[in-house]
Image 1: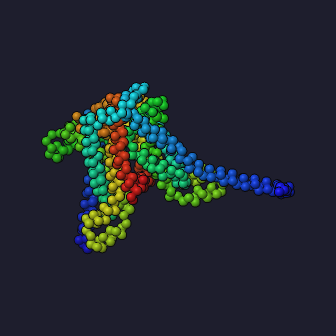
Image 2: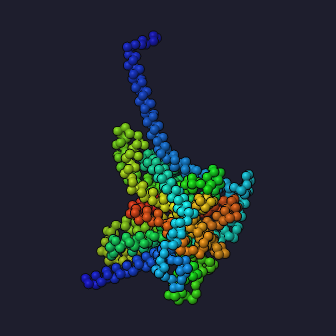
Length: 280
Length: 320
């Protein structure tokens, strides 16, 4: 009995140590970023490196937040990511309703195309997009970015939303249709209100993808007033390549929306994501 | 033969029956139409977007790849396979192919091992739920940052005067600091390491979901039979996780081969092409050299290589 208890304690210590090592691997770079953002620039590469600086200051943050050009990157990212999220959700809800509640010719083939979209390399698409977006007059505009981001957000959103609708009994919306309501009313009055958890998971994921997108944001915009946060961080790196504290502050400010969304919805989000990823 | 006499009195009744029949017929037709058109109504926005964003662009890039000076010239002429021969005989492309192979293989293997290890530790019954939640959130952190941020963090950490070199020289007994991202001997491995750091959480979450789906009865039966923890892992856990592990590995090969931003913002493909990947090679051809036609040929090759992987992925999904 005693040996079993002791063995259990040993295992507990081993697992805990392993988890702490893993946490150091995953977390220390983030902690270092946070720590650097509160340093003065002269201190960034001080020897020996200090995790807690004596000259703790918010100067790097105020420098970023008082710079109109930097704030513009945030505004652009919010406009693009929120529009992508709203449009993706709307289109995905419609498609998911079609896939979940109807049988129609070519259903399997259309579904296969949507699934395979996820594998198409962005680098393959960026060249024709460049030609297409310029031809349509959407180069260096919000609609150009919003539309192209949807190629990555839509397939996953449709797959996740369809899986979600499939878990809701058909009788729910059919009972309303028996009373004379159209399928459109049944969708928006009955299905959508009870699908909020699924929509939250899809929305958070979509927002993250769009907020973090780099290749199209780099290629399909030209002027600094159209750039998004990831490109803004890169521009900061080019402009003041020695102001590491400001780059870290900008990185943290640029990560806050995603971190907050994740912390608020992590349970629903991880649940939705794993069910989608593993079953997709 | 005399024509049948019309029963005038019956006419209104006949008309009523006929109109009723017509009405039901029309109603049926309309309902049928509505029923078969409705699903297309619902999926039509998707169909339009997928065509505009996927099918047309792919057709465009394929047609670009057979022409000269596309995009920069008004009327490009067909050059057959010239762009493909040019790309496939370009030593830079072949180097990019080799680097991509090393990068994706090492990343995927490490992602699997780390993801499995951390997921198993997080799945333990030895620690409380709160402790595990805290660790899980810390572990997911790298995955939440945009690639631009990841690039900046690691450029800071791996700087010759940075904290990694400080730790390795002071505590690890290394002789002198290394310029990890600019030394041709270390750049590809440093980049791979960053990619491993950035990508393992997604594996961990998916494997954790897989672990939680394994029935406890299997482990109980195994321990009744006297199986050691190692044998339980080998004979229960691994076989049960096999489908998840294989799909995740194929997905990771696809995603990692498409990685662009991380390379672009850390090494830009340098030094001396040692970190040039298929994605950066293609991008440079298009947007640095303005050789859109050769870039398109390279992009089509990348697409074909990805489709081979995707084909395996779909087959795996179907087998399950």
